[in-house]
Image 1 (cartoon, rainbow, N blue to C red):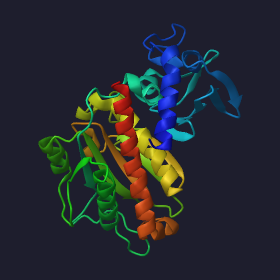
Image 2 (image 1 turned 90 degrees about the horizontal axis):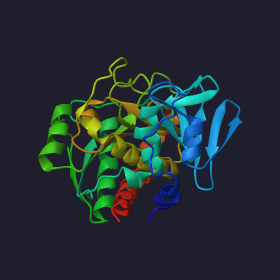
Image 3 (image 1 turned 180 degrees about the horizontal axis):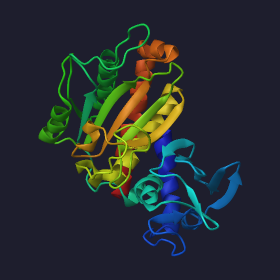
Length: 324
């Protein structure tokens, strides 16, 4: 079992006794919110303030929430909330959706993991053909970088006897709708779209993983059309998305050794239309000279691919453990 997955499983076992139910929300908090003191009691955590961060911790878990902010960290890995942590009276609160479809599924995956083991993983190398995607100052192109990483992820998963199909295996351009339709057609149980980032500032850096925004809430930042709060096909997998996305981001940060930009929420077409748990992975910024150089190297691409594959294998392990 991968080290991060092993830790998560141990966390889950410890939480089982103390968290048999998370359906009740404190009456003193506004509708649709959960107080952090309530969360602490559920997980038998001690609370403290460190600067502007509320820290909840027990022997096995650490949940850190930045007040008046959307940023949180679960066991050191950044997770973006749909709405900021806000104070109501004497209580710091977060949205109930962020607890029930984000934090709790990550910490108690056994209660949320799908009942059936995944069989087929669909890997989607972003862009391709006429669409080169992002490019760096030295003209390294996203479509080529992510195709290579995707083939490497496929090989890692197939070496573990996991069936994999790809939306493209060469320099072609399936439309966004075709990628989702293909996943449905072949019966994909997990969907991974692999990308490299671009930004106006060459200083932007790091790796991040996106899952579909919850119905009724904006994306966690400007990605995915701000103001769009619509329900999507993929929302039926919200909890599983959180488990998958966190496992990938945890392992990706560890393997890439790049800045952790977090597990985020957005309504990107390829994930919001996916018929199964889905994640979109950004492997670094081509517009950052340092990361462009890394993304152009076989060794870094291999590290990133190993991190993504370990995240998928970690998800498989958590689902398997939940079925026992």
